[in-house]
Image 1 (cartoon, rainbow, N blue to C red):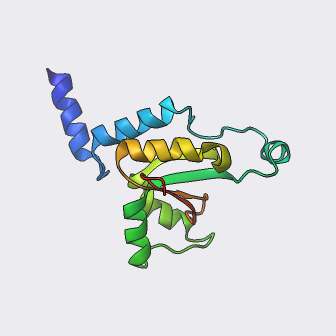
Image 2: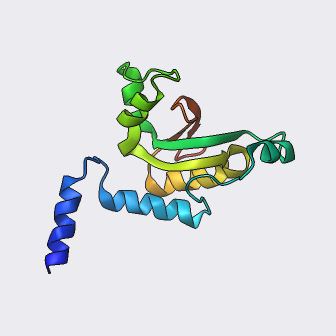
Image 3: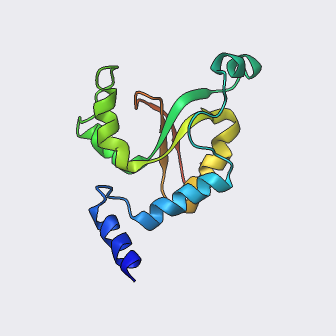
Length: 139
């Protein structure tokens, strides 16, 4: 019984605005689709050489789209090497995945994930600059 109360208190203390259950669901969807977190491809040069036509984003970050664009429209995101950590701090609670991403191979799976959570996603490079939008409803 104490453990349940402790867990409830920890969830209350999270700075994360995203519902804990929703975050777990999103993590599960990424796992089910075979998206490991973190470095996935090993040698970046070798992967690019083996997949020259693919759109590959190393150290990609995936966020919920609405908070990303809300901050962008408010002028709160600055895209430069010096400001990338500030951007990350503002976006961290809306990050749903990170790692090396072959967008060419993964776009359909990402669309399925967006549909599964009912929200659009935005893929960024490691400096949090937008690379691709993933819609929950394919056009």
